[in-house]
Image (cartoon, rainbow, N blue to C red; front, side):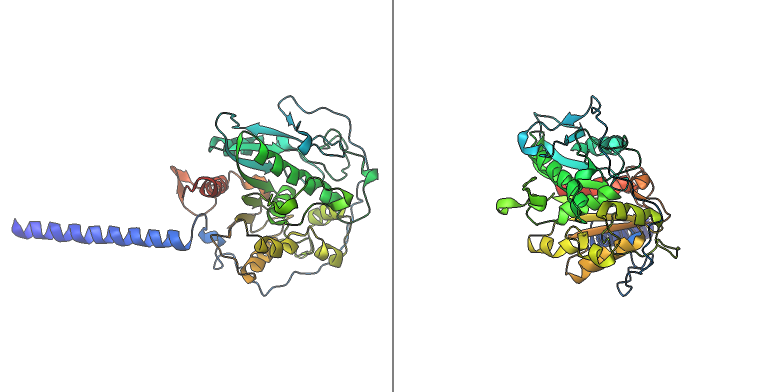
Length: 390
């Protein structure tokens, strides 16, 4: 009996030691790889090769850009909230609006602004009601926002009420870019001032909306574009940037024309929207744009870098995987820290933007009894920065 008891005691000691060691390893991993840093995002799976330069390809757009057009006079659906505060009304008379979930005047919450996709000239806030509800159900005041669009072949598609005719566009390559980005900046400020928000605001965008998200997350230049101060961004020393940002398939460098993984030519579905949005295909002009996200990184660092989370699929198109590589390499070379300053996730396959929202993140991690999805990772990132939830 004594021998058996000794063996059982020794077995328990060994078992407990293994448990302690395993726990310590898990804690160490949590310290060194905070948050959603899955194996699929590591260099040994999908290499982040910073020695590779963007591949220049013939810059041709075989699709005619849509002619300037006017918005069809339509009203928003009944569930839409139009901005009524004069501070957040667009001086060009385009009606700024959003669709919200989770808002409670008596219990202000952290706010999350969802920015829709579709090539800068299409799509609608209504496209992402499902994702907005997912975020609201996690404890946020969440809203999906409408914004002005570049010309598209179907004027009734996506143009918001009151949007001016495109014949009034300036000739500057950044005219349409400022038009859309200013709408998003205004929405960030409006949400932060909303009594249903506690003052903390994040942005989550997909594709074109992801490009808007990274732009407002990084832009520290005071507004004053096109001769107007609206939306009064970063004026008087006030930092208006969102507190953190999530990008699903963003364009980080308009001059990076590297083809999607496995392809040899730049995706036409990338070329045409960029041409229509930036109004140029000249690489040097695209590289030098003030609103080219990579050009905004130094200013963001100087004013205090806000946490960002970047997601792409390895075969992503039209936002090629190399877009993610370009930004990661820039952040690394700028001295920013993986984990605290930026995180990223690369998933297999070729899904794009919000299309992989409910897909497995391929980490094998468990999220409340099911394999973690991209949406789990995104909401986890938001919870961590809004509430400190690990």
